[in-house]
Length: 372
Image 1 (cartoon, rainbow, N blue to C red):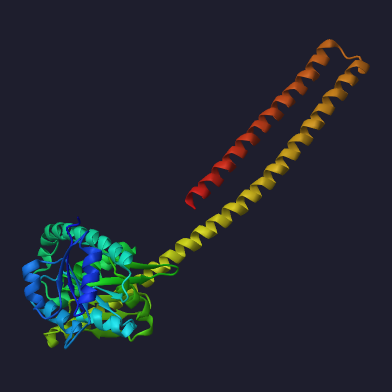
Image 2 (image 1 turned 30 degrees about the vertical axis):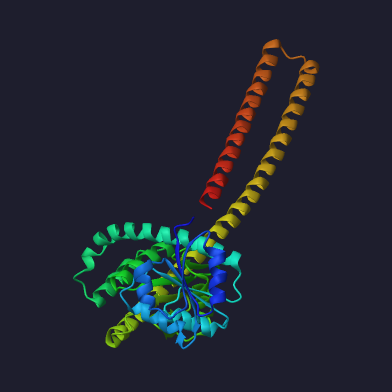
């Protein structure tokens, strides 16, 4: 049996019985009709996940979720709303209330089981990452402890000046967001690619929010969340301190400035990517043209070599015939043949140099291809 603990809250006993029958063999399931305090149930049963109905008689699942998120109960509990309501507005309200995911009725049990198993793995990974991050963060944030918020923004700006890839930009963004006490999901829009971070941990509901961001205002607040978007970047910031209006307003201004800094850096990264593509294309074209030009030169040299070889051979044959008919002395014939032999050796040496030239040309083409 899985060690995942589930608390199912629904005022319909038939729905509870259905969930219990489907999940209790694989998971530890606790049932509630919504009349008991959600906070007390969580403190007693320590669930990892709550399946929460939205319409609970005279209560609202949204309100119960908000109350739970504002209580001392761990924020690590995953809350999945279960409802027959399916509009994007309903889902945004659920997300703003503190929900992590949303399942529409009627429930597909197989899909739910797969989602729960996937969630269990994510929770395990999250706990492991939390331990690792706690060790690393203690050292990483010591230097920022005594810095004020504007100083942190200036530090972030200075740091991004040397960043040339989105992975490093996200790491720097994650660090400054943690220093402000919030969690941030990021979408970078490059020339031919969209990158979202942190990878593999963004829920389907968060994906929908990213996709609708281009149609929303530049800044949208819902619950303790803030959505900021620009031409090259979208920030989904969670855990904004909505109870402190002055601080939440100040942070919103800081995050807007942060978005502008990230936008300028992403513009640079986009430009560098375009330059790299143009340079690679130009080098490839140059290499192709040089190879074609060298091939023409080689062909011309080869034709000249064969023609020279033919002329030299013809000269040798003609000279041998003439020597027979001229009747020269043996020493004179030997001298003339020697001159001819020297000429042939010089010609062969020239042909060898042509072969070396061919190798040099091939080396140049290989070097160009390697640069590309």
